[in-house]
Length: 307
Image 1: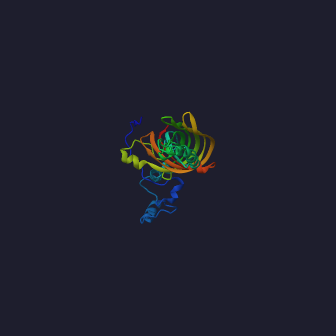
Image 2: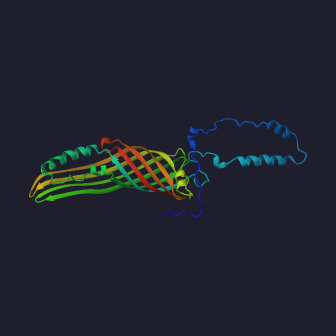
Image 3: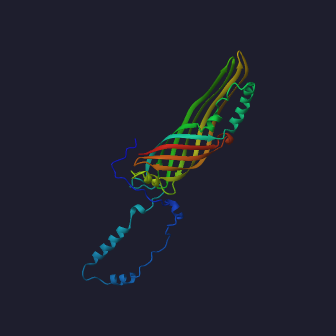
């Protein structure tokens, strides 16, 4: 899957701020004029006199040669969305992985505490254990969804990413002792899509076949991210407590919510070879609808493949 190409292994580039972030670099030379060498006046005096040993055009060629040696086109910063012939300047990529959430679920917790409190109180001898609920999934970091994204590197410091994800699952609890029955079931379905901008102050990592793991780590780069997301959540919970054939308590709850959120976070990208990278990010979502329920942290773990 991650078989490298036949190109020789590379060393990682040094960390340097790029693009608009160069102004924060200590190595930023500003607009200082280069200092003149002590023997510059003598060189000017000598060069001002015509040479009798060779035509003047040879001197012009030498000057142009020195100019060509010192001028590197790769060092010229491109525009925000300028095209370039360099293979690392622009490319498309795809992310495949999963997202783990840790949302507030404040309203859900209050509902479950109130609605499960009565049937559990009826179990005066502690025969039944507490049912598994979405709150337990949250505590176990098990609110996990599948994740896939499509993005593009626009400049040496900016990429954008369009993604979709979702999951469907259930928690079923059925406990029985003699003629006593406790049942609590939960079904849920979540789908979402969003668009983010990823900003790399030290540049997007280069996709190369690095010499070893140490060089891969040195080639990795952090980034900041922000974006918007829309989703849809549908969930249902129902259950009862019965002493057959009499039902002592029964309850159910359904929700269907559209979710609109703004997110902000940070991540780290680790290049594996000239095509593959591993991406980890953590962001916080600020929801416009029912923030006490849906605000929270989300961690993304994904493999990235560049085309």
